[in-house]
Image (cartoon, rainbow, N blue to C red; front, top):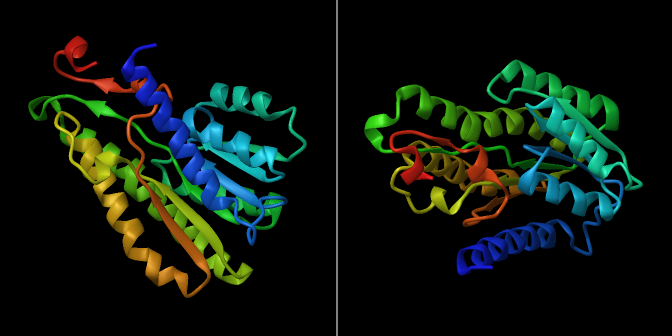
Length: 232
């Protein structure tokens, strides 16, 4: 196992540990809590779902790919918890609204929202088009914005909740050849940091997570432009 693999593996374990440590406090047990995870069918989202289920929580997984959702549900089927999967295109605000309503209708509430879904597009600026930036911003910023806008009023009624926005180190330090990714993650980081103080008075705790390189398979699902082999 080379150094790059070790660093990547260590990064994902550290990210999971930090997130789980945040939601596993003495005053906030996960048992019977309802956690909505976007991008929950694979990678970091699925790892978090396993941890939450193992600690007695209920999970609602939102993703676009029906086959991946089915595999995730099978993966979690042996755990004594309620697992809900919803096929949803997070680029469509109406689908987001319908998905949130389905989760609330099923469980009666949402205690934790984890905005985890993401895409990576790699290439030099001259090969990135306006639609590449629009797609990244819609998924990394507008989708979390829509989810938060839908769920926060309900959390106020329920007496509080927690929101975890999974940004990236690329949302704090710009990465060459990943301009659309970095721009959209910077937007999410800024939004998340801005609303933290605003929502704290409603007992809604907002956390921004900015992990580094993680071995979640995201590079396999990334889109490459320009000199594809060199970019990869």
